Length: 101
Image (cartoon, rainbow, N blue to C red):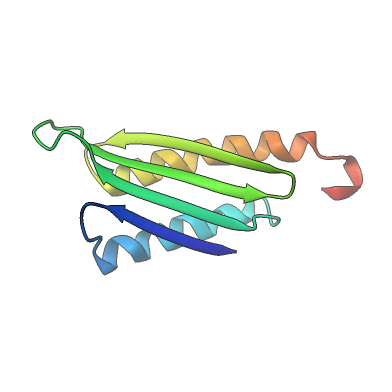
């Protein structure tokens, strides 16, 4: 799976990028057919507390899955995105014909 991380209007640290890579890579346990993952990070309204926004777009055969979350930290936002994506992947797999599972 190809994982692309994009940080908008700031430079993501190596530690943050490694965290995202590990978290997104774990999603393959729920669906091995993931082709590509695009992660976008941005700071919305810097003066507010909950201002770190993360979006996660997965490309799977025949579909694209998307989630976006805002939290206090990018790690927390990525965790929330991953949790939501697990549910979306489970629904996606349920919709597949039986022999493709």
